[in-house]
Length: 76
Image (tube, rainbow, N blue to C red; front, top):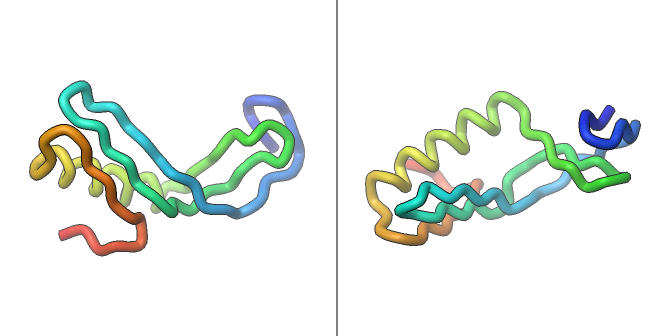
């Protein structure tokens, strides 16, 4: 069930995740999520969030202003 609109149906899909770190914007394409069919709210499981955090941490180390990557690519 959706925490936002209380809709009862979510579907597995891919989304683009973006985070603004003030000095750098990180964009991650093709991130797996559950999306509410009613309002579009997106939910990420713990494994996906852990990987997103790893990608963002790595982006902070190497990016200047904008960092765009694909979720399916390996992060060193």
